[in-house]
Image (cartoon, rainbow, N blue to C red; front, side, top):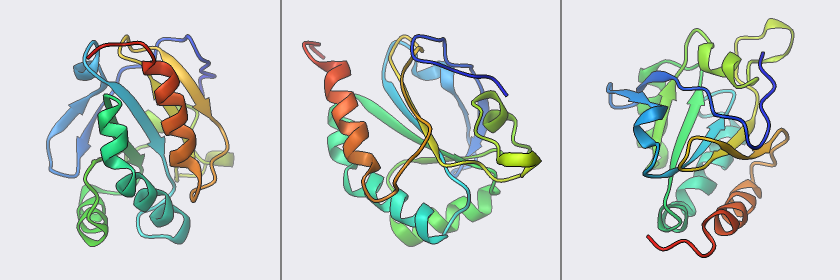
Amino acid sequence: MAKLNPGDQAPDFEATSDTGSTVRLSEFRGKKNIVLYFYPEDDTPGCTTEAQQFRDDFEEIKYLAAEILGVSTDPVTSHQAFKAKHELPFTLLSDPEGKICRQYGALGLLGGKEAKRITYLIDRDGKIAKFWPVVNPSRHTREVILALRELTKGRAD
């Protein structure tokens, strides 16, 4: 597992989204900041709380020129049901083999197959701007918004 720090180039990846399309991190370079959040499992209490917080703060995050990408090892069909049930307006990515989770140090402990709950803020240049190794699902989006405000301060879009 790679140890990634602020200032490091974010590893590129591609994954299948909840719509069945392929998403590449590099597609956003030069265009948007990325909130890349990893979570253990669709429709569990903490993961639902975190996703609902991102949903409720989606417009503000979007206003701050950021795209939200949620990643777990769940299959696309699980993501589709989770997204529909909770009316999530952002993209969920399926990482069934844990490849992206491994790249970002987010694979469960002791070889676990679930993602750990961590978040990266990636700037428009594809560099890691901030990393949250510990996340409180009910307060996390406020931390992300504060970091996005700092990142976009003084930038005209």
